[in-house]
Image (cartoon, rainbow, N blue to C red; front, side):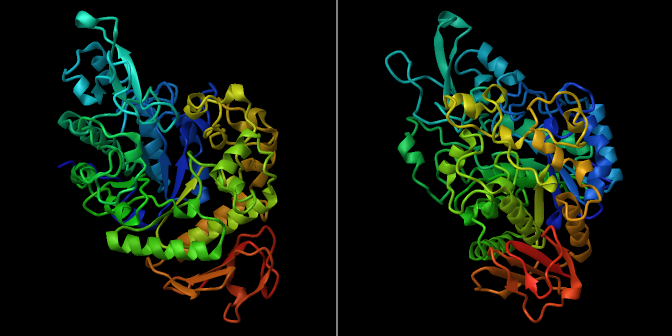
Length: 562
């Protein structure tokens, strides 16, 4: 048993109601002057994170990578990209975080490696049927000469999920040969999790980072590791039939939980046990809770609020369902509105009600001009939704920059875009770059204090959102987040709530066991406060101005202290 103990985490249950701040390292802070955020940059801002009031940071991948998919194409799972720092820099960052009583969660990417990983380069150099190729999914093609992909499966980033290689050995050297599977970019070949060597190597990776003080792991694409590769491979139409019995071709197969049971054994070697949270996009909640079981990863993201309209009935229904799900799994629920893969929620809420995914993409392609958005309303709703969420039982995941009220940068020039979706869809789907633009720290500094000229250009309007433009400014979004997170820590109580208003069209009113109450007006017009509310006990308000006596302003949340 490993005897390493994380000094920052004496409480084995710290994660159940933690406020976790996601850092996209390339876009957080650049301490080395090359235009990429880096680990020393994270360390340099640890005081900022401590003052913000978060309990943990989750770092998106910082591993060596060609950045074909923003770092989620990993060359070496047990090292740091030299552009982002060294292992010593990582150790220094962890030490600084723990000294600030902030835990560290690392992103782990088990579904696929990069095409530069030593295993894949060995597979390319080996022959069909070799042990090297058995770590991935290599298959002969269809057609008379194998010229067709082994199946019609699509990549998430557009195009086929198969790429053909040229053989390098044997009598067919130099000729087109087998095909390999990649559910994402062609630079991200899927690993074969039926291979014991793959399973053992990832357990080694978990121990490597846990030994360096990592307190937990976020598991990328946790639902996709195991595939049904029985020949002949099933066709695309069968992929579009949703099944909830663990027999889907590519996703959420029952066998994946055998893998995570093994991971749980590794995580439990530590005192306290390391935590894990699954990114599992599954359409059935009873399937999602399996990832959150104590015998598995222990927690799973729910993206229900992220996908919901700004509506009292929808929010109440989602909260009730997700809390019941968490109770059934033995985990705590998770709540999130923004991350590195989705349009920032201040922008989503600024668009007309009912805007669907197609209209969202049209808005991005138009550079943020169509449909007409209302950023003032968007930020007002975003703050109200966030304060509603921060009062809920469970853990809250925040994405870097939302505490500054940042919007999506929808008008990035085409020649600056780097997301693989943009290229693989023939420049018809813009992708996720607009939510990954480097942060503004100082309004008047070159590059807004980020460092050198950043890898994605920052818009001029970032100046009004910079950290130093908001610090100590009453009503600013930064000070609102700081206040909310401070009060959240003071008021936190048992993982329960009771609804005070269960059916009102616009008002959502719930109370935690210690009397901490949360009221949100989802409507545009003010509503009268319930007579039971003691206005002298309002401690946080999402609005940028002080509450009007006797009323709750439209699209506003307040907290009432016990």
